Image (cartoon, rainbow, N blue to C red; front, side):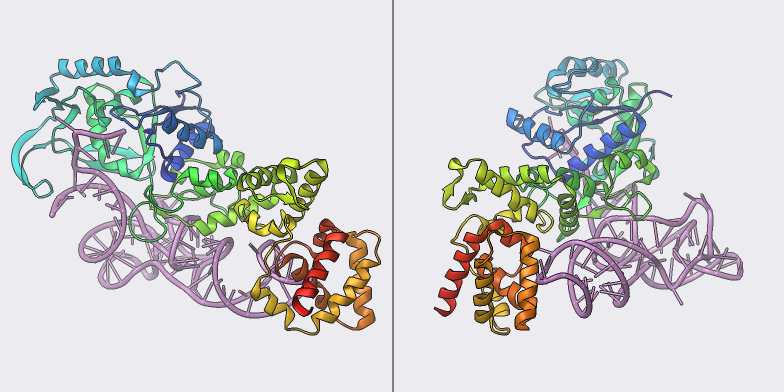
Length: 467
RNA sequence: GUCCCCUUCGUCUAGCCCGGCCCAGGACACCAGGUUUUCAUCCUGGCGACAGGGGUUCGAAUCCCCUAGGGGACGCCA
């Protein structure tokens, strides 16, 4: 049994589409599952958008998702070059092979592939003109996901353009052939192209590789497959929004594949072990950002606190959201950094995404936070918040420093003493020091803010509401 | 228009190949309760699907046929 060799062959368009990413992922998974090789090849023929930046988008995206390639740009390999733009001589050689076999001809300056079979002319309702059609033998594709698929090509097709450049179908087949690709795992949108590719492989006198056409990702709202313009369709977007790459990858695995039991959040090594071609579904899957977000939140919560803090730091610095006790980020020393770490440790279990963080933690870094009106109404319309706040203020004032244990003990004692429920203290106090009714653990919140800050905010709040 | 693929809760899916254990299981979302100091955590419960019609069979989500719907391809784009 020869080694499995799969490839991902993106065209550098400047975007890394989520569908492409999943194709790359499935190829990578299959290579890792079988112990084979994962090849990255850049399909940059006839492309003006083929720039360093466009390439970087793909490389960054793949590395972000953890999809390392065994052969290709930047890592090399024995089947190079891995840029189609550098393989012209190979294409010319293979064109000669077809020419020698009498399978090509020129028309209008372009080179065509000649199908074998009886010819006739027919009106083409799609092209709205008379065309020459060929009754060629149907190509049989033993697709590993769909089973047996038969399709006959019915028109000769272009191999080289008038300008001398080879077209996709030709280079794709020649590259797969010369790079020893054994399995072609690609989107279902290529299924109809496969008959062309089979014709070419056979014209070269070799068997086509094993095909596996994976289902497409449909847009969340509205008809059709996901396109570049759809919200959430680009990997760059998830990178920018600081999604957890493991979560995005996990979610993508679940679109068209499942471990068959009821698990969904799976370690990638386990997925590698379980992954196989026939286990992939054949029907299209609709993108669901809610589920992605759910997984992202789950990954975020279980992340080591150090990594969470680091992610949060780089994002919040980028957003310009940081200041502590009036100290701008540039002036931060270890004291501020320690404060930041405490805030993040406190918030990690509550926040759903890194991008929510600026809003979620704003009041930790400014006195100028806004008081949420809804929360205010909800909290202040119960009992006698002014009295409760005044009472708790006295208790806090008497403490030398705040710790969670002492706070809890003191608030309970106060509650027992006055007969007011602990909630009657907690809710207004949270509102006073954070402006909202949602957030991290209450006692943790006060502890991290510190006594001075809490008292100051309580006074400001009392003055503002009842002063 | 032609050709190809697909069709289980709103969504992702298990079950389908090898018919009975399925008046169809899980997850997200939604709704209702509960826990916790709030909540976007957690727990419990609810809502909710075999596209339709014909066969085959003692028996069909599972096999066959038709219809409908969805998706894709039909480029000197990839």
